[in-house]
Image (cartoon, rainbow, N blue to C red; front, side):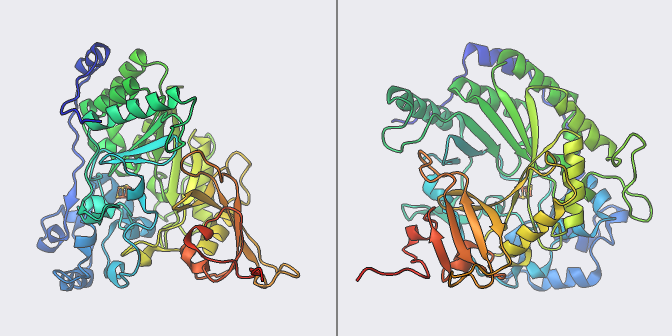
Length: 476
Ligand code: SF4
């Protein structure tokens, strides 16, 4: 398929785009540790890093352990205001030498580039992910998109090495149309890959909400014209800069909905900790709301209400469980309860990835499962929908259970087992809901931590790498 050089909007699309206004935002962003070093920050930010912390960071500059090369420092005024009184938020946003103490790990443990038929697109299921921005309003230190944000080079399946590029409308739209045409002609499955219609796209990055309204509008309408039925926007802007969800943005969404009423929007938000959206008193306690529940930050609450008041928009929260940030059952319980009470679904919590420069943030898999399970005690069924997910090469996998007792008669299960359940798998999802059972390893942070203790592998999470069952009885 030859690549078009330019995308030409349809008449309907152009009418919508002509009606959209950009707005100006002042996130009052502070970028780079140098600003803190030179004192070129507002007075009340001067003590955000201590002298010792700054010295330690500077001493790593230029070395392979340079923390800023791993992920540039960036914080908004809004986030700073909350982080001043929150240790977990400080861990999330402040650079630390710990980040590069251990640089072990894979560049791309989920091998996402294998699923990238067009630059900036990951096409694994009936859902595709597109990278539309290479930055966020602030930078989480634990980010595993750091290769995109810090513009690192990645190796592609054909062996070439280059920084990850962003998706381009003139390449993505023809790809979707062609894929869906072949699927339709072939009775609902792609003739080669077995995939279904590409009907859902997640706009990701970086954070799409750093783009102007016109740019976001271009993506929304182009995807709608290409036949996408559900569009997701993955964003942490509700935590970094909730004022971005202003009248101009909502007006753009309303116009989009008027012209494309059949398209649904899911705003996939990212709160790690309730400190990011709840008010605290001077003693650091959350404040009861006289009407029930807890008091939210006014602008965050307004943003959520604006989105929720449109019945074609859903909001789902998903977040990794990260050491010293939210490996805290009480915090996660409060977060899940307050989000659901305000109309935000609790979708996934994620295990960390075995990725380069991520060891300082990893919570072992079994510990993350225990924390999430503990946090959901005392929640109602609808508040406790979130599952713990870990992304295998084959697809999204749930850490479904961790048992404590030995399983009688099963060698390798003396300390209990972990049960993984494959939630998604690429192509035509032949292995969906199949399970893999491994003997416990409390230190494991990734699938590889169980390579020597696989007991049952219906989902073939290990067999696909030639890893045998621990108790395999080989045929004579
Ligand atoms: S919001 Fe997401 S993409 Fe942006 S820095 Fe944080 S983890 Fe990375």
